[in-house]
Length: 432
Image (cartoon, rainbow, N blue to C red; front, side, top):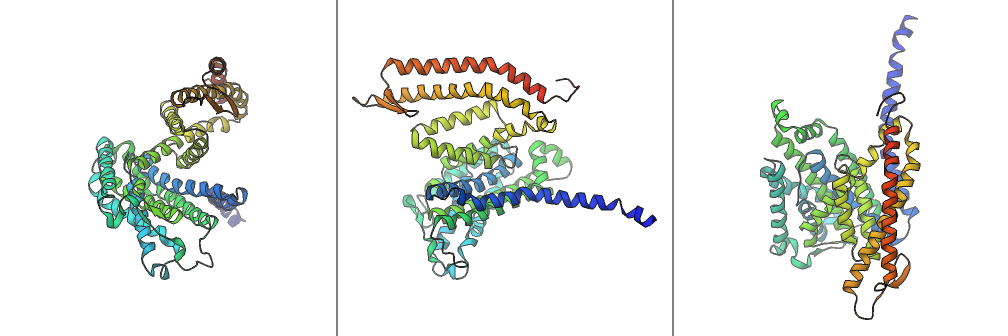
């Protein structure tokens, strides 16, 4: 009887540990299932092409967030590690007989090794300092490698780049990777694997120390840890996964050019990461989805999609520095208190007029652009499924009126939303 009493308390704790392990693995299982069924939900070739682009960018953004979000190292040239990894994979694809020894699905591993090799060289001197010095070194390295792309033609291929054919290799379990759907599942596998490995790295002592060095390098040094070596290891791991993204890019597009190395690509991944939220692991994933949709959808409707993306990035940095992920996590206290439902109606009352205000401002911007660039006799323009004369007075009056009224309604609804927010985040019987 005594034995039963003494052993019983251990059983609930074991069940709790087993339950926590299952809960910890559940998001990854759901993510795997989601990636599997996604082409079934969106079977068109254009949709799969966009999903391939998203998945590659997600790997790159997660790798960049290891550097910026975890390590606090702002880089303006991280595209070079993705680009070098991609160029390495393209050259391997062109080596005669290479696929006789290594199937195509293993190729991104060599892209990662290429990115890691460059990261070891650059990180050996760039990670001595963080902050502005590191950012300027990364900018210089990025411009240097981009300039070398038109000089070292043997490796970078000059202005034309280097192309390859992924279908030359032997089939992998009968899969020849002729179709985008087959390539999608290959990219999705590497996305899931890379995300899991990067998440596990963030939970290791090295990942924790990267956070400590980011927040207080002096204290980390006082505890006996070398800030330089912690930054160096984080930088190398980030370069490896950036190279993996480059390998996936090489497989998907079968060509690498100077554009994969330049400052524009580095700036884009910085925008994506900040948009999603650098303080959260899943932030770059959200940022990638939002930016890709903005780029894909708006580019079909307007030439000013880059301008709107810049405004979105500016608004995020100024008003929501935690990014979209930070906005989501802000609701965690209200969810724990069971009061999140109280925010639905105030959100609708405030955000509906705000949405129309955004549409009104966008209409004014589009009309100004059309008036400035339209040729003689081309006064008509199409916007919001309507066709009208951009030189007429009525469209301008309507756009200004809608914008003004929507802004006034938004401002009027803001105090009620603020009060509802304070109430939803205050425990019963507590004070705001």
